Length: 233
Image (cartoon, rainbow, N blue to C red; front, side):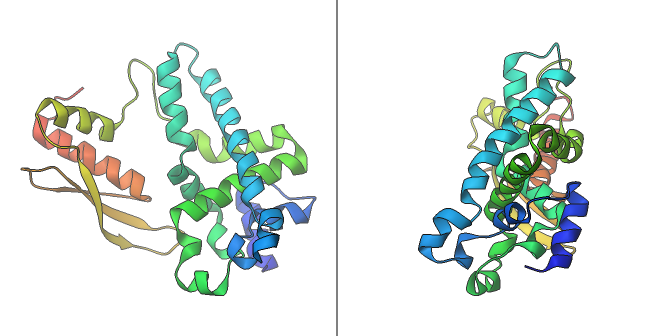
């Protein structure tokens, strides 16, 4: 594993590992190992742990930030913040693709840039931080990389353009919206995605963002504003 890429990742992550074996395991994909080794030495077990660490830290963050919010609002925000797409965004920001140990064949196919792989590796890194320095250290990392992603859920239901568009389409007797990627620009560490939202009988609307998820939400908001005259919600 390239030590320069690993050191750069630690700098962006905000945690320097005492146990190097933990971060190395967190960045090792099963394709780089034999089938027997994969069960013990890939990031899969750390991913399992990191998923729970992330959930607890985000739940505590939401509980503290929104003392008046209803349980349903907190649950929706939690689900959005711990999903694979959000974890993949963080992984891109800290340079996981460059540090990931992956099979040669799989690297040629771009597996190290896939949302599922980046999201899993991000969770594994959080699990590794927890084992390396305890929950406070993991919580600090999560706060640093997730706090600015927390939506404002005060004063009513959490703003979610995709959910709002889906509900609006239902009231109009339309099929559920679908999304398709129509373009991508920029380097791997800072991509800009262009996504179109499609609803039967209506002209598609495009949106852009630093992840597919953000681009989808931008497109949904634009379509909703166009079709409702900006009066929705």
